[in-house]
Length: 491
Image (cartoon, rainbow, N blue to C red):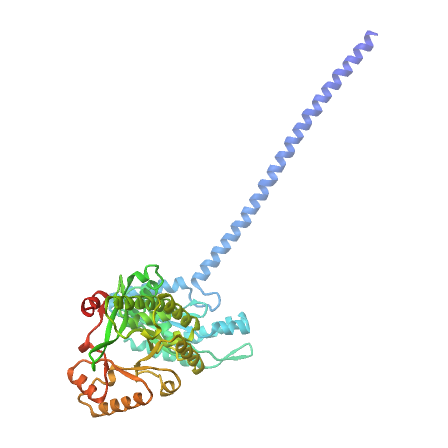
């Protein structure tokens, strides 16, 4: 019995030891498996890093290759060209040499690319590059600046005119037909040129000048070259400043209104006060009405500015009447192009109603704009203005293209003659004959003529004898501010 108990006890101890051993072995096996997974992950990560490193090396190699060579045309890469340009500028400065920077742009390349595919487009670029290389010397450099624009460095020029010779050679070469993948293509190009040192003494300035000259060339035509011009560039910079200013919230606060009288010399009364809008620009100083209207029209701000002008001029006119100053009309300028918009005319009629202003007091002085309107558009516009009830005048008649047919078909009340027509009336018999004819024409067509630019008593007396009564000019009074009108005109 004791032996059986002993055997049973030993068996229990063996089972316990076996259980402990299996448990410990299982834990160790789990640890080994975990270590194996970690090792495999490290190996995989190492492999991924190796692949990533290879890709980065390949990318850097491509960037280096593209820096040295354009992938499409095989020309020098941009960075290499830029380095050569800087080096040649230093050399030109040291030895007092002249160099040229030239942009060559293929016109309508995108249309060719879209219509025939990028393969044809790339082939065209490659052949264009070959022709350009053939037009320059070995000492010169060429690169592709953008998709369809090439930049050329002309070194050691004997004179700036040599760049024009090269430009003509390029245009002639590119005018020859291209045979691309069975397609016969004809292209045109524009070229912009800047010259060191007259147009700039560093790479950035020369490139900017050539680029600006290129834009000028593209504006003028389809197959020509243009040198950079400082005066035109300065004008462009002025346009940029003015265009930016037209979009400022403070724009209307910078406006100032002036008024110039139109005098009836027969009874010595003020027939009309013409409104002149000036812009007191914080950087450029005083901007006159013509320049302001031109830039406003380009930037599609003219209608908003005209509405502001219309409202403020009418308010001032009503204020004068309340003070006892009674000119017959307030003259307000509008561009002919503005009449294309029936919404603009409707807005003017709303302002007249809101201000409780008699529309017959308002003299709209129509100036010709940048685009001439079709007859049916003009007819609709003038009929609307006739319905509104305002008076209409043609500004600077005899200078623009406002024809006699317009006078016949549209309800024009006044013709404001261009000042150049009467400038020499006291000495030129032909001018006097023209003035006689115009007074006869206007009388028979039930219109009146306003003479602008009267500067001397001799002119005024001669015009008076010919039958003119409405005149304007420095002799009769220049532009006045609102306060000056109140001080001088209000009794």
